[in-house]
Structure formats: structure tokens, C-alpha cells
Image (cartoon, rainbow, N blue to C red; front, side, top):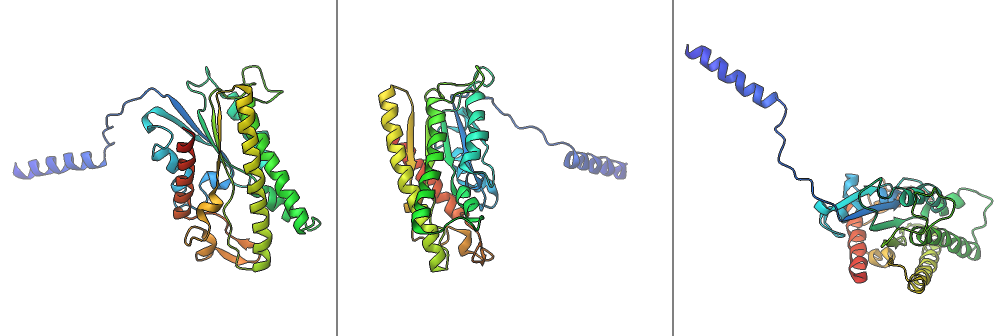
Length: 277
């Protein structure tokens, strides 16, 4: 009898251990905001391990833009995408997936785009690499990012009638430059840094003009410039190029942030967000 009882108890214990877990209580909160991430591999979390330690996920998880229970969230950052491709592929999604199809329109968008445009340029050996050409290239890439921001704020022609043709109401767009890649070859580092600083200078000036245009138009929108270059300048341990297997050769190197680098980027986005409130 005792043996039978032991077997029954053991069987019950095994069933509990191997059976489906009991669902914990969960409440569906009403959403009052929507954080949407656009851009390239930096936005996608590349370099972080796991990628959900990327700056975008940190901003959501830490409740920078609002309590998680009250925020919708989506990250459509794509590795390898250029600013021009983000304009064509990602901007229409942001403008067209609107209420009533979804409950809440995007209220804050973060954007990192432009680095891949430069690498596409470098891939063509026929493209000039003199300083004048690099500065002009950087300004042209900044202009593409400018187009993305303006489309989100002021709208985009040619979209279906159900899209936000006049821009997303009340949107806040936070756009960043890029940090220095820290290449060990001085000549290549000069070229990269010239491109990055020129891009940042042009983008910052363009954001200032967009801010003025928003005021002149009377729109309820905000745009902030996030200077990750200054935030990460001179600091160690923030980039994979500084880590094992992060550098394989002159044009074989990692440009992405480490977990620590993504944390710094997230803090800078948060700082700019708070300055706009």
C-alpha cells in the first residue's frame, strides 16, 4: 500500500514538473503612446548581446518615453539599409499604419540612418575619396535623412488616402549622428572621421531648420538631434572594433557598439528627449 502511494505521489510530481506552466496574471493596459524605431543595424541592436540589449530596446524597457504598460513598441530597423531605402521602405509604413487600423499612432520615433550610404559609396572603386568629395557626400547623405524627418513631420505625397499625408500628428522624432569608429589606420581613420563629422555637422544644421519650419507651420511636432559622436568620443570599451575579432583588416572591421556602447547611446537619446519636454 505504501509502495503504491509513493508511486502515485511520484507520478503526480512528474506531471507537475513536465506539464504546461500555469499562466501568470497579466493585465492589458490601455496604451497612450507608441514608440517606433526606424533605421539601420544600430537601431536593430547589432553589436549588443543579445540584440535586445541594443539602445532601442533599452529605451523601451527603461520606460524613457513612457511606462511600458502604456506604450506600444515596434522596431523595424534593418541591417544594411541606407537612408534612401529607409525613405522608400520604412517611412511609408510609419505614415500608413495609423488609426483606426491601430489604436495609437506613433508618438515618438528614433532614427539612425546614413552610415550604409557611405559604405555603398566606398564599395565603388571609381568614386573619388578626396576630402572635398567626402564632405559633399556626407552633406548629401544628411539631406536624405532630412527628407525622412520631413516626411514624418510634414507628410509625403503619393501615399494612399488612409495614410497620414500631412505627417504624423504630435510626433517627436529623435535622430542621431554616428560615433567615431576608431579605426587603427590613421589614413583610413581620417577619411572615416571626416565623413562622420561632416555628416553630423550638416545633419545638426538641417534639424535646426526643421525645428524652425515646425514653428512656422504651427505643427504640434518636435525634432531632436542626438550627438552620439560627442557622447562616445575618447571612451574605451564602447565599440566592437576594440574587442577580439572586431578588426580583421583595413576594410574588415566592426563598426557596431558593444552593450556598453548601446547603453551610452540610449542615455544620450534619453537626455535629448528630456530636453524637449
